[in-house]
Length: 126
Image: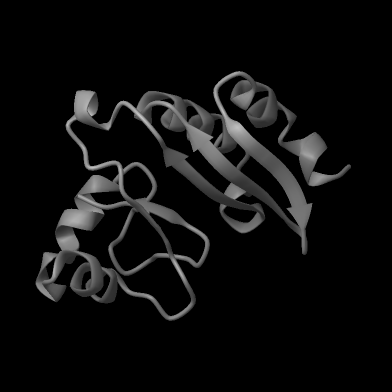
């Protein structure tokens, strides 16, 4: 069974909401594209997370193209690269390394510890 089969529920959930693709590359399923609202993005993420191994098997870069003003968020995201820390991301994008907890709080749905981020994760920036 391939990853597209394993994540068929997430792929079917994305249909009609997601303008992009879910392609298997190098042993990972890459969701790359955009949605109109943060709610659509969260719906797709929740479907992905129904598979316990998702952290090791899925790389998702899902951008929100509209609806940011309605949700009160900036709509900006950042895909974690090897060697990144929340402090480094915070310094580069918020101008203050000590503001890393703002990024952590904005991503509590996918982060259990501010020191445990993985390459490929897509984090919302406050």
